[in-house]
Image (cartoon, rainbow, N blue to C red; front, side, top):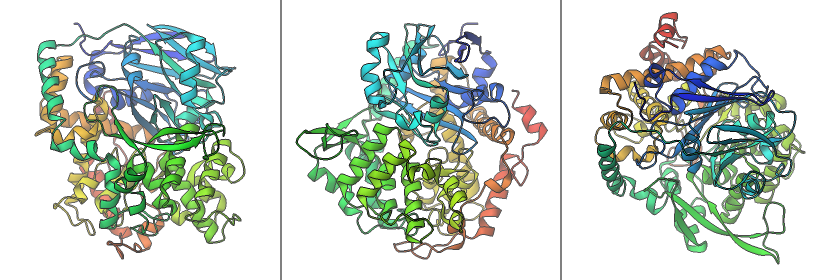
Length: 610
């Protein structure tokens, strides 16, 4: 039977030996795990040793495409990077949008699995299925942007490149994998690349997947593109995700000064409305996207400085992409209200290859430690923009205070001690994104049980809190199935892969996803079967973590969120009861069909049919 939407195989490359092979993927696996993060989880369950060191040669790094990649469907040019995370020690997947996804799938594979460690600094080149490992010494030390500019001189033109910056080379535990100005940011997969001496992966190809119903697919894609211009995506087009900043501040859910408060007195100064008046702003789109949510602000930099900072005699204008998460993490979380500083910090993270959320969260934690006298860093204070920029550079180089912070807030707290673990802002080692859990308590549950750690993309439970279905300050058991629904939906969308900004476009999201799969692959999914598939994907992720050493104690939040009332803001005084969170977690686990503590039975494991 001919496969549609897939090539039916993955490429496995061993950087130690230089050998590569094409491995067949059974159609049953593709139907049960779809693609993207689902297929990537299945591959890691097959290939990743239990309790492996995340920075060892044996830890596989997986680039995964999906059946929708290359199709005319809007927002489908996405790929997942997956591995065991050096930051969390648990499963990590990070998604990115760019032409790398389209070119990668054209190599003739549904995924690329990289194992081993090359003895020299190298780049992996995949040209229509032909694999070459080339020397990358000439681009080592460069940013991903510079690598994409210079590497084609060594390998030829027409390739799409994903690469790491200096932070990945130096094995910073929250280093990114970047491509075309986009970033697979969370969890430190750039460090996994760096541990393999792998600077970049370059892909080029001509192999196209077929579609089960091409004419119907073309018409469906046209209709979907038209809907994507509607009111459901208007705020992303007009202001981008940074539009959330003032809303969250008004509601008292904007994490400020390391989650001590829920609103920031300087929020207006860094809002997109104000920054847009002082900095030229343009809009852009990801590859194959009709929404156009990227908002890029012009920043004057000195091209003679190493990271393009300053405004000296060689000043030039560059564009900085600003999203809510880097705005929150490098602004209010660190007490910074100067827009130029936030823009410079965001650009610096991009140039160095640092995840903005973990970078901001870890530095904010260090600022509080310094203010409490737990570490001897007199200048490391909330609101000090110059020290924020300096600390970002030190983290990427693992120098000075950066040697302490380069492994994230959890590891830093373990070294600092003195009770600092109570306010280190992480779950399972992954720093919290910009949602205050005491004032968004369904989201608190999503953070606590998340297999990747504290994560707003793998659990959309904040949608429940911002609705009228729960009291966000005192959620009950009724919130659990609603939280599960958002988690299941994310698992499906990240396996297809589609941008979650399309959610509001669909009247019936399960029916829409089923129809897209039918048109592309020919697989017929009822809504019930797709729901069962989503549960399977989440259970598979949990099983991976169990094999890597997960225990129930990890499914919690730092003591700050369970013992301290929230500080200033509209949600001031909000508290999250430790016992109540524990009860919600037990209900969640039972609803998933796991034990009350979160263990997966042998029967449930067999049902995965791995």
